[in-house]
Length: 446
Image 1 (cartoon, rainbow, N blue to C red):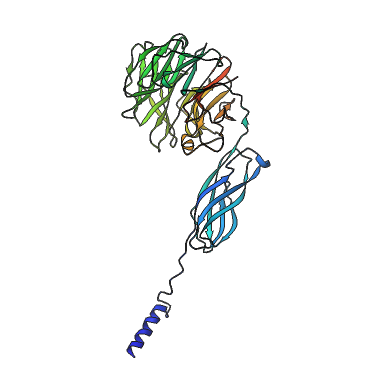
Image 2 (image 1 turned 135 degrees about the vertical axis):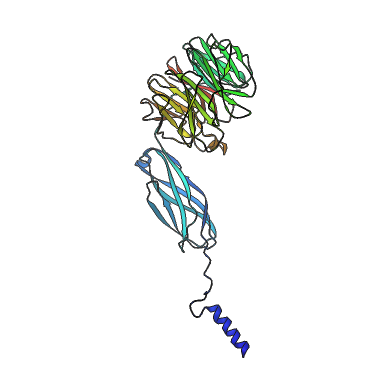
């Protein structure tokens, strides 16, 4: 009898008969998980489809609960779309057609997730959709291509273009069309070149500085060293200033010469914030240097100096590192760099960011012809690194109003523009056939 009572008590306890005990365990819910979200296409030209077009969104899912109910899409304008996606599968693929506006140029984000019958939401995935302005019909003509060395920079001396590149290579041209290779006294990579009056100065690896006084036809070595990579050079009426990086420390490095390269003095008062020098100009009475940094989480900054000796750092934005190109367009300084960023300053100290219509491009070159500003570069290295992109992203911008508005241009396929100059009535760009080819090429645009 006691045994029967005990069994009954245990059964009642298990059932929670008085309402206070725990009832049967609830059914375990399994939120879906999604991955591999793709939009197709993920870029279109402005006003395609009369202002809107159908874009396919596809993703894969896994759902142990086998009870997917709906697909939600967060649109760029903040609205949400709901699609019925009833499924009892453990894994599968979901695809929907989404109408996306094309009446504004820019890069937009679409947020997508699944919800099951219990109301549980999957993880969210985001995908970018780009609306680009009409690409300017290519006006660039290839002058040289497939060279067995990359070209890094070009300068107009007033009478000739001088281009420099890998293995100490130097090429010159009076018109930007026909080019002649010149004898070079060095075998290290030459990375930057600048000119003023009769002097042409090129710099590169091993703290190398070479000088030409005849438009790039002949050269002499003015400095060499070790553990320093020079990547920038500027010439003022009174001095030559070069900049780069100390390879052992990653610190910024600068040195200057007051006697046309005969003697050099290292600038030991340079601010050290982890940024090193990658471009340098002298304009409007001011030296301005663009910088880069190894850290993934860093800022975009320039260094400025009146005398080439005392330098100050200015932060332009707190989440972009590299400013590959600095110039002056007659009215303002322009600094352009990674992830399609362009900044402008009337005085070198106060900067504003300009809106640009393309992303995933690094601007590496620029030039100004008195009325038109051109910046160009190549597809961002990390985007290229994962594989050849599926389309030829426009890698250049052109503006006749100081960057207030832009026309988008491409030079040729996946060509990367490393340096640019204006002279003799045309723009000249030097670079590589593709960002990873190491094969030099030269283009011009009248």
